[in-house]
Image (cartoon, rainbow, N blue to C red; front, side, top):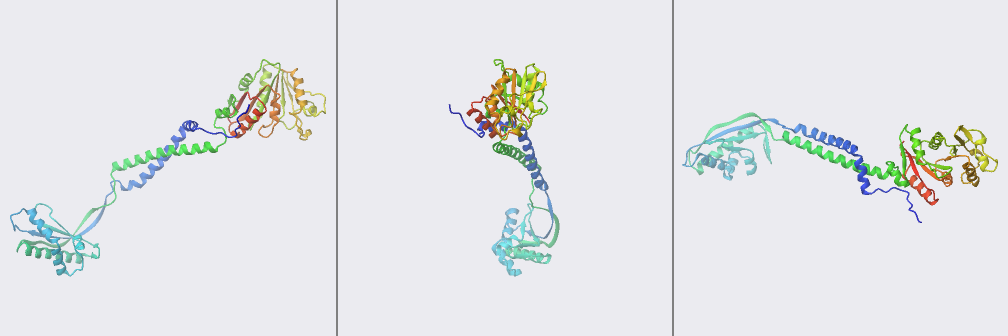
Length: 430
């Protein structure tokens, strides 16, 4: 039967959404930071313009014309006629004849204002200086006074020509006034300011959530290690025996591991420990001690050590290589014995794959209720899998933060092609 071969973890859209929902606290944190950044920036940039009022010292030449009751029309109409005459092309031409100023009619009309402040027969004329319109300029008080005097004379003469004599007279000769006026500048109200801040904060919240989704999704795709124990279970396609955090790999924890890996149908339960980048190297020994505490005669075979933990007598190396006729396990307590190896004597020879190692285990089956075999890191060698083929129970022990998804998939693929059953996974959250 063909088995699926995988070396990488692919995330579905639902999984990406689920992982991002679990990181709600990061989304909240980034939302707060972005809201504070955008809201603070908006506050700093707009605060100087809230109800902003700027004033300037305004210089003007003021003069006034009095309009007589030259007709039966209303005073507003009579004054309006005089204002239109002063702003007319004929009034402009008369002004140029009087003053000799080489300016256009548009510049002429832009340099003064003629208004009727209330329903009266008075036309008020204002000339602000210094001022520049096009090529025309009023640099100082004297020029402004002369300019205003020309306007009064032109308006008076043209009005008398058009309307009749004595219809307009000068009420106030030109004089200079000075006042403090509010300048037109960028300003916003307090309410607009608050609304702008709220919009910036809302945009910051949305930006923070989007940043969290983008960053965490990107991290998921480039971070090749499992995010949780469930992901390890999916990679290995095996049950999670337990997840042990720092300080939790105690006797009670390994009682549960021993219970899970128990096989009452066999006279001797052989258990293989396949380590995959696990920060703890004593999981197999603690499992063996747990069985021994149940008063089961247990043999612990340590193939991960560089040299024997005891004397040469409890090393399997000489026996497997045919240099010794027997092996004498080291007694650790009344129910626990151990065997080790001597790598310096092996010269690269395969121990776990040797038929004499399998023969040794068969001999030990008659003496022990349980045999636990510990091997070196399976990610770096095949010895753990060779030992696993000799066992009826096998479990993987790995560190979630130290093993990669690819390593888990490769271990699963190797186990499948060699018909090795993985009964469970013990995960260290380290």
